[in-house]
Length: 323
Image 1 (cartoon, rainbow, N blue to C red):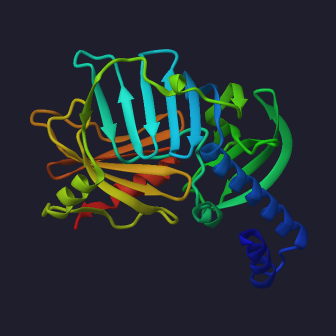
Image 2: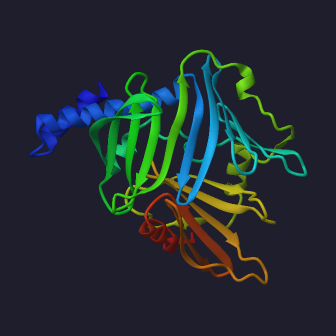
């Protein structure tokens, strides 16, 4: 029904849009809807790689969907051991440190592969042209590829490989303005469907459960704070989705964290006091697809980062001010 409404709207409102264009747009959106649903509703387990600039990380995932909701475990297979367990909205991060602690949070910041697409696709259709591309293969599966073409300079181009049999997203590439791959997720092996044993989603790293924060406590804390930070002129298409106060590793005081999204890309804005005797890093840096921009406002350091072009994080950083 939504796709038919969109098709009718395009034909009536936008001159020069052919029925073939509408059919392609509708078909591409149908695939995105399948991929968004499949990542949350299907059982699957496999291994994927995440390429980010010169860095490559391998992870193993097991995802279970049942009457009690979603349950998932992501385990890194190289580098420092780390396990992330998710039970619906509760996320537990296990790291083998000296305290044997488990970081627990109630809010998920950003999407996790293969659930990169939001449930509601309105932001994507507003900010990207969704196009059917050719067929291809990923992890041995026949795929339909989809191109998300940005409508302006504030976001990257994306190419998605969606399993034709199940709708699960198997590969996702982020491309810059030169059509170069600057970030990529890709399954190397995947089993879709069947039973997922509870042992596959249990942590191997022992630890004590330490609740770092919960959503109601964060909201109350921010409402009682007299100092409010805002981004007055975010780039077009980016809307604020949450504001919180977070305890970050290595920080003595909580950091203000504002999160913006265009429906696909997420940008984080961190506001923190400048540490005494420390000269903060300023200007722009890049790590793979992630752009970072830092500046100071009085005694506070502003850090903006996201998998978006440099112009996006710079504009957002320069728009931060006290309300």
